[in-house]
Length: 137
Image 1 (tube, rainbow, N blue to C red):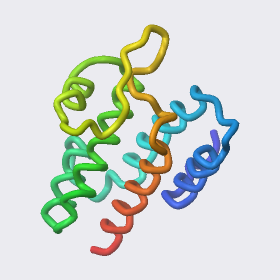
Image 2 (spheres, rainbow, N blue to C red):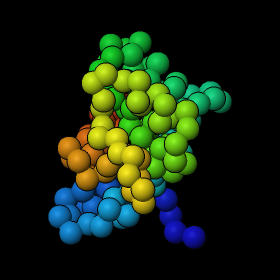
Image 3 (cartoon, helix red, strand yellow):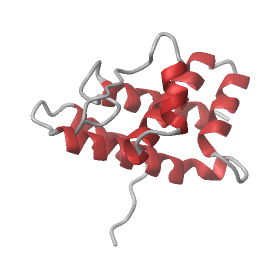
Image 4 (cartoon, helix red, strand yellow):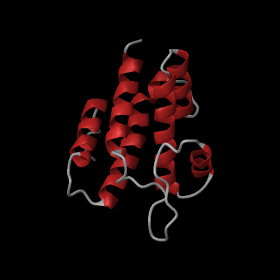
């Protein structure tokens, strides 16, 4: 088993994929899931038991980072959709106006288009800002 990277290295690894114009869609999707999961694992100690991203959203909002709180939570929902397919997370995303991401309903494609609108770069930025906000306390 390899050592797990700290948050800075985790985000740097994701940035390498985001900056690679030749990255395959499957590679980007896998990096999204890996990054969100590992981010949670690295920072879970900031919260008591319970749903990490809900608690992170609430903490960020309580500290005045309302837009960041929603953005991070939306990326969490999108990663859940990539990981599990349709379900509660997809239904939550579909209710948001305007839609935070490009959702697609085409056979054989993921329900979230990770190639649209700098998806992975946006995720990296949101997680980096969230990590910094947690470290500031």
